Image 1 (tube, rainbow, N blue to C red):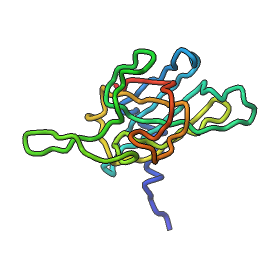
Image 2: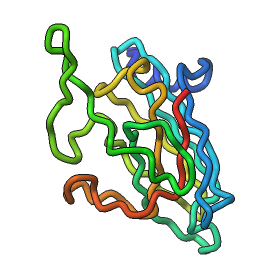
Image 3: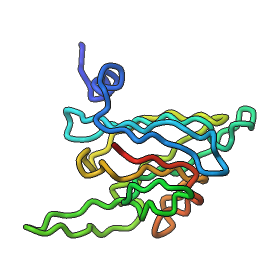
Image 4: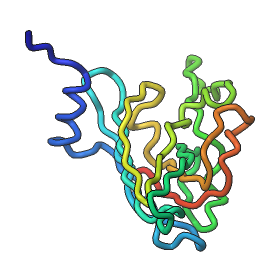
Length: 170
């Protein structure tokens, strides 16, 4: 039997399609070699495929070293160093007739709470599927890479530490 799965479609999207939005990541003063991109692709499943490829993470000089780093979409698209103008984690607004009202919810239920990166000797690559946001609502916001892993518990943002990388979604 030959079954076509969403994973097969996602592989084809990553291999053949151009992203619908991209955030080019640059590092902070302490991590000037940190760079990469986070790409966002529409899928036929009403969700978004997110692909991240990041170079120059802080554990680059640790042989065989791996470490997790928090990654989030933040409300504001201002990546001026030291990345203190990115706002809070993006939370989708709810359409209440003519008015958009910020959705409530604790971390990690924000629309911008993404899977962590696993950096192996300074390099991280990952892809995942998400239905909590769409392309038009994230364009102009920022993707932030944090120095530590997100604990998915601490309020309001997961205690993932310093913002070491940032890129505006375009």
